[in-house]
Image (cartoon, rainbow, N blue to C red; front, side, top):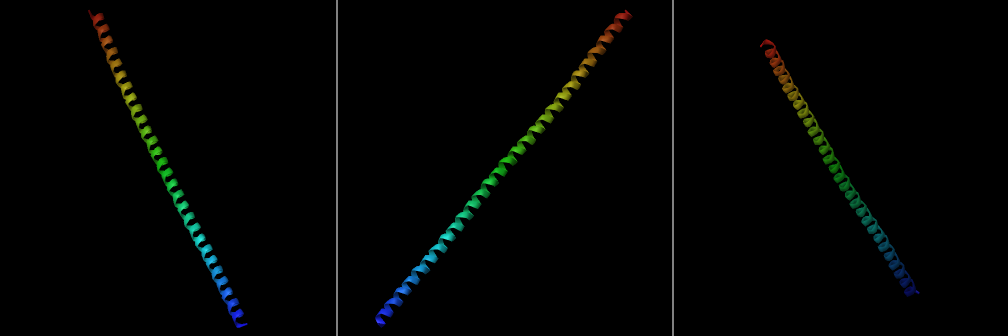
Amino acid sequence: LLDLVSLFLHLVCQLLDQVFLLFHLVYLLLDLGSIFLCLCSLLLDLVFLYLDLVFLYLYLITQLLDLVSLFLHLVCQLLDQVFLLFHLVYLLLDLGSIFLGLCS
């Protein structure tokens, strides 16, 4: 009878060891899942950071294009002013020519 009780207790201890190992395995799997989720979160953070950098570069390019457009607009206005100045000089020369024609 003692042998049977001893064998029964031995089997119960082995069963408890197996249950403990199963809980330990579940805990390890949960830890691995947590680590995997953290890695996915970091990867998403890197993707969003990369997208932020891309949008920042695009914004800077649009600002640069705006500056180039403004510069070209100013150059065109300057050329208009130079054209008007030459036109005024041409008109003054015509008036001088007319005045000299009338005086002679």
